Length: 49
Image (cartoon, rainbow, N blue to C red; front, side, top):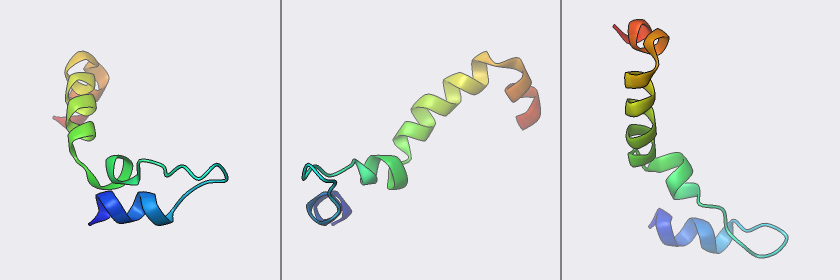
């Protein structure tokens, strides 16, 4: 429902919808971007435990 309705009704001046589902609801971006970042950054790794 969010994948279809949000881009249809929330548009900018040019009539294009932002990828709200990917930015706000979908956890895949967080997992794909966050896990490698934590694994490669020693200060973040030690902060998580």
